[in-house]
Length: 93
Image (cartoon, rainbow, N blue to C red; front, side, top):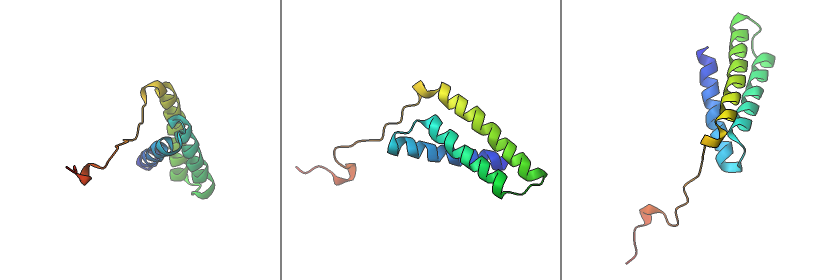
C-alpha cells in the first residue's frame, strides 16, 4: 500500500505542474495520469498477489482522489509568481 501512496503523491505533483503550465484542471490531470499508471501497473506488473494489491490501491486512490479534487476545485488556486523584475537584480539607483 505504501507504493500506491508514493505513486499517487508523485502523480499529484505532476498534476500540479500540468495545472500551472497548461491550465489543465487539477482533477483532470490527477485522474488521467493515475489511471494511466494503474493500467500500466495491471498490464506490465506482476500478476501475483502483491501486484494486484498495488493495482487495487492505485485504482482506489485514483477514484477517491479525483472525486476529492473535483469537490475541492473552487478552493484550489494555483497562481505562479509574476515578478516584474527578479529580486536578486537589486535596485539601480
